[in-house]
Image 1 (cartoon, rainbow, N blue to C red):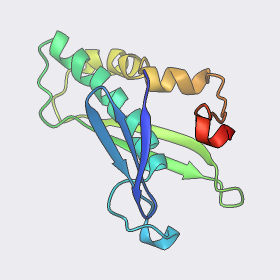
Image 2: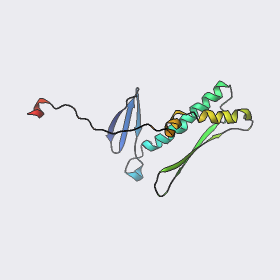
Image 3: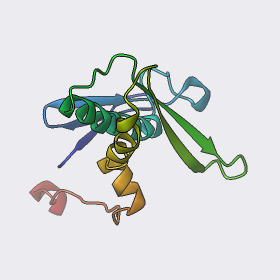
Image 4: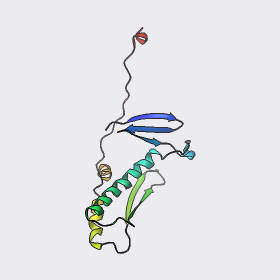
Length: 139
């Protein structure tokens, strides 16, 4: 998947891909306007929503109602480094939820593609490219 990144103003950064635009901004405390989630918040949300998709599919495949099922994600950061040390996803189930589905539903959530990529992160690189020079620039 290819993304195109634009800078619409302030500290806002937008990503366009597959006909969608994802807007991001920084919180006011960090110099932004707080008009959209920060890129890091979207990263964390992608993990929880990915697990949510796997849980929802698990429930639907077994005709188990999703009413009352929720996911809560907690992020624990190291105060000294500011780096995330642990991410916990809790699947909250209602009273009467079939016990036989609890452990398999956890295993389904753990199949989330975002989680798998965190376990074995891809190589990343950053480079700079320039358009070819025009005749006027070549002189």
